[in-house]
Length: 373
Ligand code: UDP
Image 1: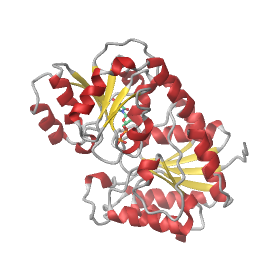
Image 2: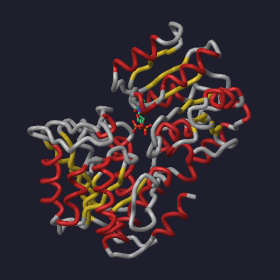
Image 3: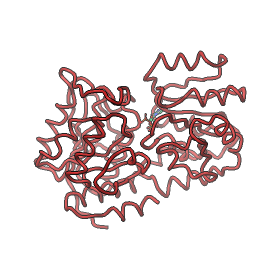
Image 4: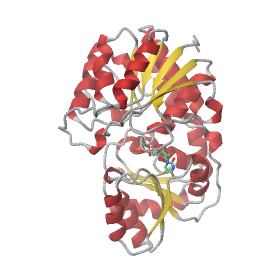
C-alpha cells in the first residue's frame, strides 16, 4: 500500500452538532472516517458545529467548533426546492474556516450534503473532496454533483452503487462503502429474541411497514432512533394496536448495540434510495440478521439468504416471509461478513486511497472496488 501521510481537513455535517443524532448516519460515518485516517498516521482537523464531540480515541484530532444556525436537510425538502441558507448559517462559516485551514493541508473532505461546498469546488485552489451521503433527493443537488463530476470526478465518492446511480457522472463512480469500529459491537449468539427496527423516525424510513409485520405476528417491535418527525411517529403508533411499538429512544452506540443484539431480526424498510444504511451493518455486527426491502444501500449490503433476506420493494408479504425464515440465517456468519468488509480500518484505507489518488490525479478505482467486494 502507498502510504504517504496526509494532512486533511474534515468538514462535519451542517445539520446539528456531532453527537446530536440530527445528522443521522453521517455522524457515525464521520467518526469512522477520522479513526480510519488516524490509524494510517494521517493528520486530521475537524471543523464542526459548536457542541460537537469526538470519542476519547480521537483526541489527537484538532476540533474546531463553529457557531451558527443549522442548514435544513435536503431530505425534508421537495425535489424542486431552491437553495436556502439561514441567517447566521453555520454552513458558510464551516466552509470559510475549512478554506482557511485547507491552504496548509493536502485535502479538505466535505461530509455535509449541501449545495454550497459542491458549487465552490471548481473555483477553489484548496482540493475539496465530497463523500456524498444521500441519494439524489433534490434537483439542485443532482446538478451540483454533476458539475463537480464534470470538473473532476475523482473529487466525489459514494457509499454504494445504488446510491451513485441517482447521479449523472462523467465517469465510473468511486465507491467507498462505510466503516465501523467493530470492537464497539458485541456479537450476541442468542436466537429467538424480539423484532427490532432502528433509524431516524421519519417517513422515508418506512417504520409503518415494520410495525405492520409486528402487528400481524401479534408481537412487539423494539424501535431505536432519533425522532425527527413527531407527527409521523404519532401517526404510525396510532395506526396499530396499542403496545405494538416499544420506543427505546436514541441511545449511545454502546447501549444501542447491547439492546439491538438481543433481537432475532432487524427489519429495515427504506422508502427512499438509502445511500448506505448504517443500522444494517451495526445489526449484522451484533449477529442480528436483517430483513429489508431491496432498495438503495440495504439492497446491496444484504447477502440474500446468508446475512438476511431481501423482499421486493414495499412488499409486506415478502417482508413477513423474510422474518418468518430468519432462523435459517447463521448469526456468526453475519458478524464475519461485516468484519471482512466494513471495519473502520478498511474504510480508512479506501478513503486514504481515494484522496491520495485524487490529489495526484491517479486512478485507484479498481483497487478501491476490490477492497469492498
Ligand atoms: N443510532 C444511534 N442510536 C440509536 C439508534 C440509531 O446512534 O438508538 C444511529 C445509528 O448508529 C446510525 C444512525 O443512527 O448511525 C442512523 O443511520 P442510518 O444510516 O441507518 O440512516 P440515516 O439516519 O442516515 O438516514
